[in-house]
Length: 80
Image (cartoon, rainbow, N blue to C red):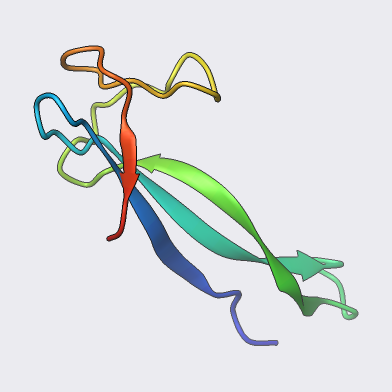
């Protein structure tokens, strides 16, 4: 089996200070992982990770309002 696709879907940028502490990755789902029936699915899930420039960024406290760890402003989703 080939590896699941993983790509940057978006960056989360602060409109106030311009900081970009998080990235959103799009990762292909796998059915029956680790077995001989393992197969790639046409669906994807999303994963929030700290941006490489900000590895110290702590995880957000809520999933519905992700804020800048520097100034507290709500982050905006932008194209990578």
